[in-house]
Image 1 (spheres, rainbow, N blue to C red):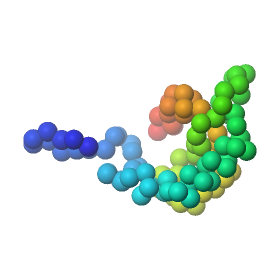
Image 2 (image 1 turned 120 degrees about the horizontal axis):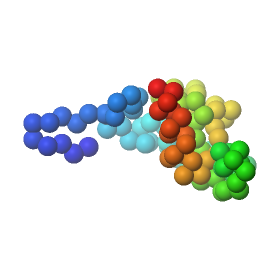
Image 3 (image 1 turned 180 degrees about the horizontal axis):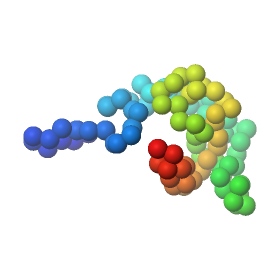
Image 4 (image 1 turned 90 degrees about the vertical axis):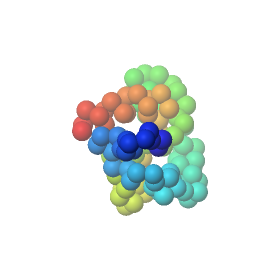
Length: 100
């Protein structure tokens, strides 16, 4: 995160992520890439779009309950859902922000 002279870099308010941690350090490793690819093959449609009556290809695996670094919750397949990028970046983020 870039900083200006005399200013400190800060995390987003409410973020659980350690400052500067890479995706790999947060658990999104090659093992995750393989597992999420297999999950998307089993769940090819976006769950939120389906709920709204649309047919949209899923593009990523979302954690229904944010894992906040808890590796047990991270790997719990019952906590995974297939979403398109639009739903993940829009509706899902709004839900999490409202939940606090």
